[in-house]
Length: 226
Length: 367
Image 1 (cartoon, chains in turn green, red):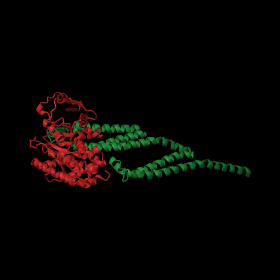
Image 2 (cartoon, rainbow over the protein chains, first blue to last red; image 1 turned 180 degrees about the vertical axis):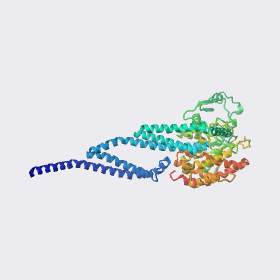
Image 3 (tube, rainbow over the protein chains, first blue to last red; image 1 turned 90 degrees about the vertical axis):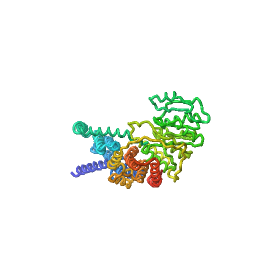
Image 4 (tube, helix red, strand yellow; image 1 turned 45 degrees about the vertical axis):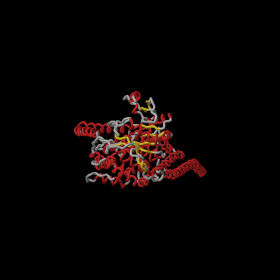
């Protein structure tokens, strides 16, 4: 009576032991990868921060229009460190040989390039928007256009919306909706401008053009600057 | 030899140069006049611009072993044969290397030269060259060879910065400098499409680029040095010029509101506050103080060097500020004669010189 029970219990314990023996190397590998990722993230954080401080990244970011918060260098190093940590975690999960872990990790790793591309598009969009907005502002002021700031703001948001739509399209989020929304928004802006110029502001535009031409005539008579 | 360094003209210039008759009286008054005078018209190579045209002439002068070489702009109306003699005689007879032009101009003309280029060049290098970007120069053979040794012919110098580059290179190379009085300067009506903002950006950008290249020289102390003037100085009548001052002041005032963020990145807080106070001041007449103007120009130079914002943006944002100063200058000299105008500009030059320590402090240590 007791012998079969003991044998069952022994088998059960053997199975548990085997399971633990099978699981332990995976766990150790998982912990090792995570620890390495942690160490690499820490080192990257220290070295990258030192490098960015040396090349005066904060000033450059400020000039380029990427100033996010009071300390862009620290923000970037934190971002890099957390990205390495996340990558380490995703690389370590399959080591546990868990179906769920692999199920989560593999698609996430495959999606990562899209995520990075979208982030790059947004960053580039932000930079282009700021650059174009400043170009338009300075040109409009030099041409003595009254609504220079409004024009510049319009250009900035147009580029930002375009960049956001491109990024979302790249991520595959609501492709059709984003495309439609963008087309409607862009078309709406153009239509509104056309209507404003064609109907509402006909006289104002006429006066403005007339003033523009009369000023051009005056300008032709003006001094030689060189 | 007469050379037309042609930039693809379609108005028959090349043919006119080749067919031009040269009566004996108009030929250079050399010890031994040469006949016939050779004429050559050739398209220049490289980047389109005046600098590339100069380079072709320099190369020809060097290959011919010319002792002196003069260059003149293509759009001059007041040029006479004597101009060539005036530009090369100091080289041939007196051993000078660089002859800058000295013109009589209307008091409202050449305002970029008067407000920035002349006083800044003088403050930086100590040489009183009245028209550093006059465009018509005389060079010695040695200076021509010196120019050709520089590797600048694929840069903005080849396109539009040749005048200030030629002047600055001659100054910094310790060549012997003088000026030639050429009388009035009248050129063709300006291109209606020419844009003040682009023109100012090109001229001031070239000047700032030269400042960067020669920082080690200009950061030393230089005592102002008079550069001799050759030629008989006489008074000439100049055309009347109409100016829309209201529009200039409006442009400055509007820019103080709209460009606050851009100027904030370039100007010191004190100067920005000074400009804003000036823009909002209602008192008449409008008066832009020289010290504020000069410090603002120095802020722009330092900002250009430190690339505080995109350089083209920085240079173009100077336009309304410049218009503000020009409006103030015109209001001050409206009733003044040529001598009083020169006195007024002399006062501006002295402010540029006295504020040079401010430029040094803003420029930074590594340049």
